[in-house]
Amino acid sequence: MIKSLIKSKLDDRLYRYLKLKNNIRCVLVQDQDAEKSSACMYVGTGSLSDPKRPDGGVIDGLAHFCEHMLFLGTQKYPVENHYNKFITQHGGQKNAATGEDYTYYYFDVKNAAYPEALDIFSQFFKHPLFNESCTDRELNAVDNEYKKNISNESRGQT
Image (cartoon, rainbow, N blue to C red; front, side, top):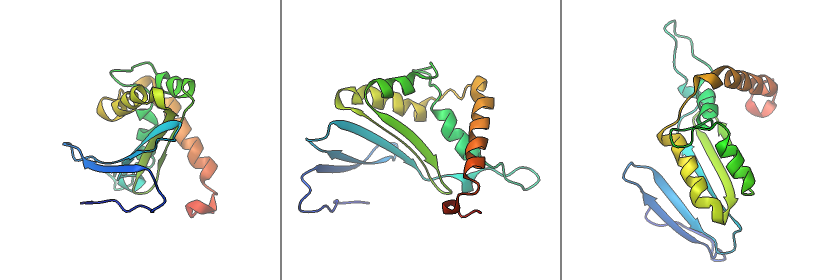
């Protein structure tokens, strides 16, 4: 458990570490000069956790597919592009990535929009819809990303 955070003597930001009742660990950073606020959810599982088929093979890409599907609507915000539009309309950016043993999701927006953006974002992890109508499109998106990156040497493949 973290008892204190170490920071540079020149760093004037305020930091706070806390562990929520659901065991999610958080680091909060306050910077009075920041024009945007951001959040990142880091999940300690990725492609190495893709499930095995009955024949012993792996269902490749399921973690990445899940990453894509989370962005496509929740019980509270069911409209598919609501998140994307909100982030864009409030000067922000968003993205996610799946690695072998992690997946992370993040966004930033202008400070005034942060509370609502954080609510929309948090719903992905509470009540995602996983709409069947999006399945084929997102399977294709994941497959296209894989094909695009298959020869990327930084991924250890040639």
